[in-house]
Image 1: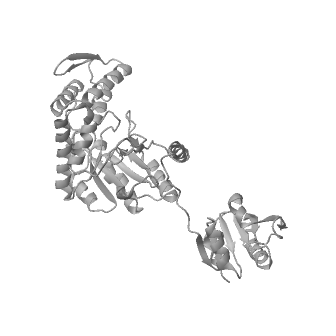
Image 2: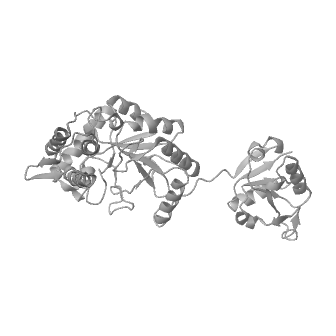
Image 3: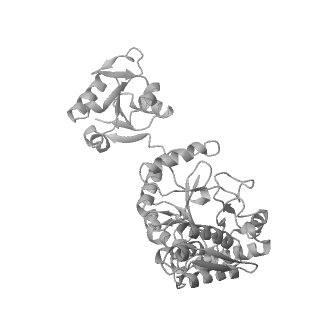
Amino acid sequence: MILLYHKIARLQHDYNFIAVTPKNFRYQMGYLKEQYDIVPLDYASDDTLSITFDDGFRDFYTEAYPYLSENNIPAAIFITTGRIGSKEELWTSELLRTIFTGNDHKAYFHLKMPLFTYDFPTQSLDDKMTMYQAIRRLCMKSEEAVLKSILSQLREWAKMESAGREEYFFLSEQEIKILAEDSLVTIGAHTCNHISLGAFEEAYQEKEIVQSKMELEEITGKQIQYFSYPFGRQYDYSKETIDILKRLGFQKAYTTLPLTGKDLMYEIPRITVPNFGEGEFESWFQQVMQKQQDTCGLQRKQSEAVEYIGKLKSDKKLLQGSKKIAVFGAGVRGERVYRELTAYGKGNEVICFVDNDKIKQGSYIEGKPVISVGQIQEAKPEIIIVNSVWEKEIIEQMIRRGVRGIHWIVN
C-alpha cells in the first residue's frame, strides 16, 4: 500500500483538502511506524507500506522531512518543477488566493479565453465557488501560455501581486539537492505545470514530462526513474502518457486511484491521506485496509518473539507497564513467579497460567485459569513469562505457534 500526502501545514482555506496539520502528520507517522514496516518505493509491493508526497511544497522540507529523518522513515516526493524556488504559487492554490481572499473583488469577473469569453458573477460565496470550479477545470487542460493568461487576469481582477503566500512556496534548488543526498528520500517527477496530461496531444505531454525530468536530474545529479500523474485519475493520463514514460526511461508511475490499472508498473495505486488525528486516523486506516483486503497483503509489524531475557527485577517493560501477563507453568516454578509478581504489585495483571500438562489444563491457580499453548491467542496476553527447566523447548514451541511477547526469566 502506498499513501499520498501533499502539504503538511495548517491552512486557512483548504478547499482542495490537500493539507494535513503537522500535529496530525506526526501522529499518523508514529502510528504507522509502530504498527507496520515502512519501505522506500524501490521495495514497495502489495504487502508493504510506503509514503509519498506530490507537488513539491516547501513544507515537505520544513515540516515533514525533519520528522521523517529523525525517525528513519523513508518517503518519496514527486516535484512539479515550474515553481521551484519561486515566490509565485502553483496555479492550483493561486486560484484559491485570487478568488477567495481579499476584499477588492469586482461584482463580475470577465474571463477571456482564446475561443470564448465569459462573465462570472462573484457577489456571493456560491458564485465564487462556481467560478473556481469552472476555471480550475480550464486550467487543468490549458497549455502554459493560456494558463499564465488566466492567472494574470485573475490577479488584475483581484488587485493582487504575483508573489503569493509563503505557506504555498515550493522547494528551492538547494533544498532539493539536500533531499537528494539523503538515502531516505526518493525524488520523482510530476510535470512542469501540473496539468491533466490526458487532455493534451502526445507532443505537449512529452514536453511537460521531459522538462520536469531534465530539470530534476540537473538539480540532483541523479537519474529520475519515478513519475506521478498530476491529479492522477483515469482521465488525467492516457496510453500515450504511459508510452512516453516508458520511452523516457521511467521505471514506475503512480496514480491517485485506489486500485491498480491495466499496466501494473505504470498505474500503481495510492491512497490520499485525510487530515485525521488520534482515533480518527486508526479507524480510517483500518477501513482502507478492509476495502483493499483482496489486493493488499499488508501485515502489522510483528513484535519480537523473545522480548526479554534476564532477571524479573530488571524487566522494566513488565514492571513499569500495565500489560496482561500469562505465566508458563502450573507447578512450583509458575507459582513462585506469580508470588514474585504479586510482590511487585503485578499479581492482578496475571490473567492465566499456561501448561502442556493436560491434567492441569482447566484447573485454577489463585483464581487464574490454566490453559494450553493453543489457547494463548484466544486469551490475548501481552507478555508470556517463561521460567522452566525446559525453557528452550517451550519458547520454540510457542514461537512456532506464532506467540509473541515472550519474557524468559533467568534466575
